[in-house]
Length: 499
Image (cartoon, rainbow, N blue to C red; front, top):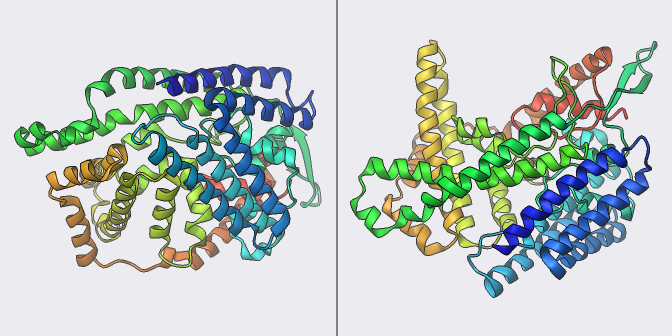
């Protein structure tokens, strides 16, 4: 409990520090060096206050990884950094879980290490892409993220340990962070007379106050919901013997959905507060929408409305823990030589920790994802017309998706093997069996992610978006792509190459 209080207190302090940082250390008046130093020192102070000397693990993991980058060289450092950073995180998680406080599912020092692990591995791959691989070998998104020079130690530590994201993230790309620190987030580009030269000028820095206020309101509502409703609907009640013996099947289904729905607000609170802190510091600006309104969702980690209204497994995953999904996609899914879905879920399980429930959840997730993909590709096109039939399809798929998600993540909450199997056995493993039957009976289109075709489409689209951006003079700052909208990623990332 004290760790949770420390976490909230530190995040509130970080929010105030972010406001001060944006007002008094704005990039137009302060050097990048000073902004890096202050962001790093404040981050390390918060880590020390919240976790004590356990915070040294953050520096050890980051420091050794940086040495690996320097010593090994750009050709293979991404592999060594990946193995070391993930291995060090796993050792810390094993120590904490099996030696100190098994089952204490609260804020702990391995939480920030999970974010730092993402940053270390992401940066290693981005440097490898930018300094070793040829441009034609990269996808448009990889080219946009590629880092063309080795970061200094200060830049590296600032990226990993800054006060805005050290406690709860979210993950951001190195180029986005450096762009923010150097004050280039608000630069605009315009084509010269020859059609090639680009003129950069600054647009007035938009205020994040409205976005921060809205996100703090969401935080307040989420916290209130968690402290009231969530306590009365524990997930553990799904395996209560009396409940299992007396409840009807519809009651079990409804309670499963409602109890998992009630478990989500604590994540909404933590991730939205982290997003608000970054916005308060001026980080997270993603240009303007078609109406000219500033967008502050560059590093947002979730979209609550899309999560709760998801009509497919993919839609839910694309809007839940967005930055982690992007990390998994960039370092694993896009680079996997075989079974990318299975490898990605396995990496996600290892990264989350060593509780057996995590592995049960992600193994079930692989089955559900493949089954949902097969169902969608074989059935969905029959329900597109007329609109009434499409509405019926959406309602049914919403119900199925919410039940399947809830069923899948129960072990993630219960953590241990025995209660997890108690739950699945009480449901007679029905969704596991259904998923297997779907995969056996329905043909699966083997597109191997459609990698080659898809990347060619991306390349052609990126050229079109590039031409549009040159003519319209849109914002060219580096952005984090949206897993739900690949087109937006191509447009924004391709434009960042010109900086």
